[in-house]
Figure (cartoon, one colour):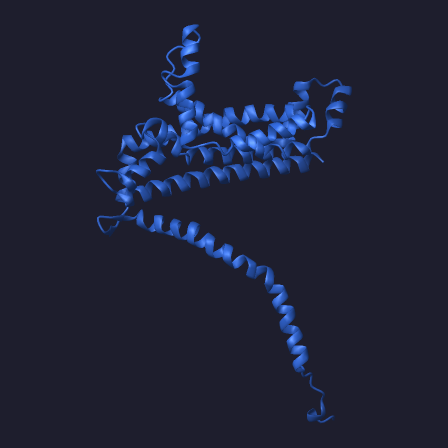
Length: 302
């Protein structure tokens, strides 16, 4: 038998060890670049969410679910959720429909005009908050330029910019540019040859859109719809500037409970925020399920 003491052993020289450390550092370098982002994400996303979740269960310095019970038993709070969901849903539906028609038309126009419209859309998507509310007051307010003109010709009836229909108009306005920017890349998935082939087979334009184009675009449409709902539910500055906080919405209620002049109830505001987060999470899960079904249907047709 060979003496085990004579068996060769693999030893690493200092040079090999140094090279191994260099290779490891090169592999870790991309991860190290994520450290600042991770810290930023924790400080401004995770930590506030944890604080809100914990404080939502604190009522009179004790752990309790009384904050949630108070919200459920309050018709005023339920009205705020109802108003927010109504505005978010219909502004998203109308905004998505208009944006879909606009993006579909942009694919048929000259490239210079298309680039100009996209640039204007990008600019208008950042026109929100107090300036947007002020612009609507000047144009469609009680003594607004267009309001007086339309009333003069009997076109406009009892339109109230400071009510739900006026808020719906301002919501639709800032939903359209966002929807256009989100949908514009998705329409590149459509090929002009598909519509030509459908026409050769005798399909009408409506049949092409319902049986070819919209099924292909459905994941992008669903995803954009959810983003629009989240964008509408979280809107605050425009509504507050337009109504001075007199219209009952979830964001207005949270702000009044955190920075109100009379009663400060941050724990109740935290409970409202948690319900809002759960609601948005549920909507997102449903959206992902619909997208998964859409992709599964496409694979089944292949």
